[in-house]
Image 1 (cartoon, one colour):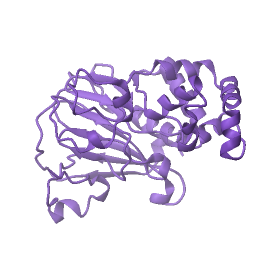
Image 2: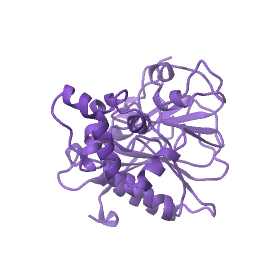
Image 3: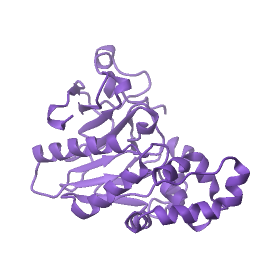
Image 4: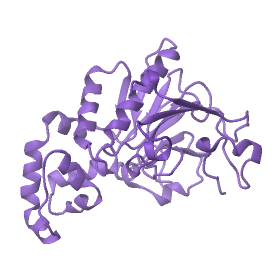
Length: 310
């Protein structure tokens, strides 16, 4: 179905003040996409929606398209996702940043140390291999004994452009008052002294931190059923590979949080048939303990965010 004819549901929040300072993107419109995980169909539909939105919101400056990592594993078409990213790196009219996620890090580790990093195969790596035409032997023992041969076959099937892209991905990007990472930051280290491993892999230590880092952290890695907004971070991983949504947040102007969202929704979560695009125009509410008023919450289920629990 063409994006121009796709059903678009517009959901708006009432005008609710947010408990967060203003932030600046220094005049650049930023489109930040959450975890893709091999969901090629969702990605190309979302990219089409972003292109249409960018045309409607031109401000004379080249927008930034940022992908927050985890392009491979779990979903069925990791090969086509990486091929799309390679194409974007060559032809996109956007400034482009593709961050490294923990699944890209595990894939690269498997290529370098197949026996020691074979655990990657159990957390989605097998589906990535399958997308490149590599079939695993049956049984853990057989995999352990043949892991180097599996790596070699994978290298034979992996285009050089895909490998070059994977090896070139940075772990962080900063624009204005925003820092973009895949997993988060270590609250026990200064913001300018973060380790790449933490930026790609950290979870609970970051998720439960209430630090004010001086920048808003925008990340993925921890999938939720809806976009998650906290005073010090925004989580854009909405579980695409689990039959949920692939989301993009649009950051612009002086607003602390995204001004609008697009989400590609699996048919199973709504109407039967083709994938659909939902457009969520903020104001999205930063919820505090006790939640929003019923009149604010009831008609806007798709824009609900998780509660901030101090």
